[in-house]
Picture 1 (cartoon, helix red, strand yellow):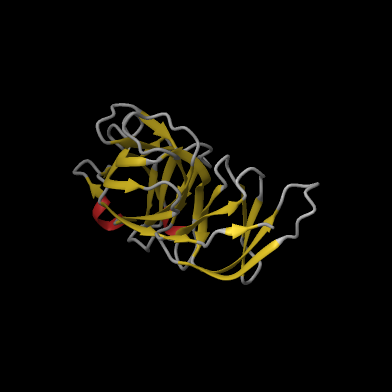
Picture 2: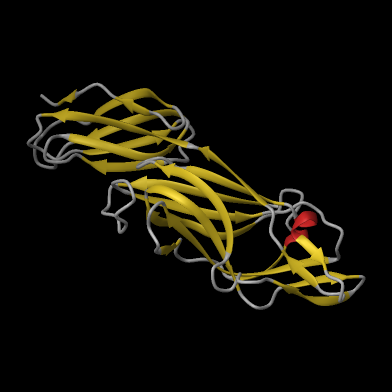
Length: 255
């Protein structure tokens, strides 16, 4: 089973003393590989993260809580637990899945309670020890080994002792640059070659701009000056974005 987590960053203030400047966005996707059971039902109530050196826990936001049969999440099927939720950027030590009480395993047609010690309180813990950088979209894949994670007990019951492996994949980059003169506000829009990705930002007081969360590929940048200045729109084409990299664009000058 894998859980894919996506995180992109913006430059809002964050809420953790141990996080880097900026915030991240995270999505959580649940998938699985077949196991030797009729069904394995996991009652997911929340997804929380912990930061290095911080005792507090942070929910990823609007989680699609519910009961998921892991064995149905095969062959490319998945369940989106959370989509594009904002979290603080920084040093993430753990991700935890907080479970409810409706966890069961079905064996030979019989539904049996799946014991989950402490999973309702502290959650299923997955160690990460990774840094979420400001402005980068990441995908975290948590590989949940169902066969190794479910233990049959002598009394006929079943115990969940999760065996989960985590790996990180950065999936976006950043475009940054500036315009002149810096005294006017300019709308900068990046449009992907296929037109499916459109990201915009205004320049700041120093004429600088940053466009976050851009999937790898080629972009056209459109610079729209402040209304009423009688200036032409400027366009830069074939701006390349690489994963986990910042592309710095030449200064665009309005005359």
